[in-house]
Amino acid sequence: MDGINVPELTGTNYFIWSLKMQAALSLKRLDSVTTQMKPEGLSEKDAIEWEQKNSDAVAYIKLSLSDEQALQFAAENNAKILWDKIKSTFTGQTEDRKIDAGNEFKNLQINSNELANDYIARARGIATKCHSLGSDVSPRELVYYTVRGLKGKFVKVRDILKTQRDKSIDEVLEILREEETSINSPSSTHAEGTSADVFYSRKYKNSGMRLCYVCRRPNHVAKDCFYRNQKESVTSSQRRKVHRNNNSKERNTANPVFTASPNEESLWFTTNVLQKNVLS
Image 1 (cartoon, rainbow, N blue to C red):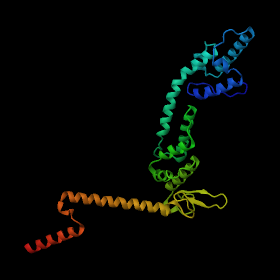
Image 2 (image 1 turned 90 degrees about the horizontal axis):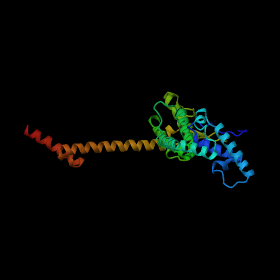
Image 3 (image 1 turned 30 degrees about the horizontal axis):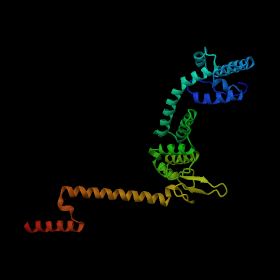
Image 4 (image 1 turned 120 degrees about the horizontal axis):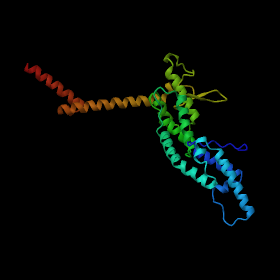
């Protein structure tokens, strides 16, 4: 179309096709014939001009259709009617696909054994699909749903990234690659300063210093991070405490005598032993 790039309408790209076709017709000053029927009472000169615009618009539109679509609309020679028919044919389908793409994006999850590169590429592909259907996905949304979909070997990464909302999708990919390298490498090769160090991320361009992604402080890796290890230690301690409490509750339910304090429980046990010795 005289150097104007309009994608071929295939039936799955109506939104992008419509957007670009409208722009192309506007540049050609032909958009008016797709929005209104031929006005009444035109002079002979204006009527001829309108017919020429209508004919040109119909030609431009039909030339952008795939073979299948061109055959479907071959008989229509009025630009507005042609435009409206195409719109009514594909709008409902487009809305359904937009909903499906949105649901696919919001339910995004990494597959087992899926590589970080493939997962991020898939997330970007779904976001592009949403955009092509008229549903914009902001960079923040892309990062949010991508991080939320992490699981399995990336659970710890996900929990840390949830606290760092300023990351770009490229930075998320870098972190996942580092974690992937760490998981796939023998533990003996995890020497500090190597590429396998988890969360050893952004390099300062001037100093070459790298930061721990957990606490954002330099000179250590995340696996040795005090804050991360402290958090995991507290979590383990809490689990043990809950386990002890549950066991204590089970014993108390089975034998009401053991509802006493630890000292009273010890006294009860000692007394019973002494009584048995005396009786024997």
